[in-house]
Image (cartoon, rainbow, N blue to C red; front, top):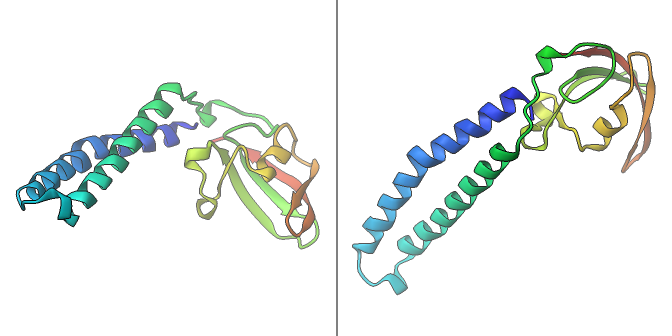
Length: 152
């Protein structure tokens, strides 16, 4: 994952541990004070949310412990690799798009970040500026050309 992606996961983990976890513990305590737990919807909802929060904390801790953090700003060249920001053009429509190739957890197409495991990213990896590539999409094969590769 990129440095920014790693920082975002660390921020989420810190928020879950310092804000969400104490809030849900308090909510469970309050719900417990309302009496019979077998018919207490508040209690069951709070316990369910606690399970989700604890699961997410474990997932984030695991991902952060195993993460290989790559700083794209230390890289250069015209070859597409993880972390690259790639400007491409659709050969049929001449529509230009720019994407950064990032880890699965930080992918967000609206922000122009695509997962390294996505079909378009896999097709671009190891290509250079000026190379054409094809992506098999649900609507059929689409051809693209790489216009620019930058690392920031």
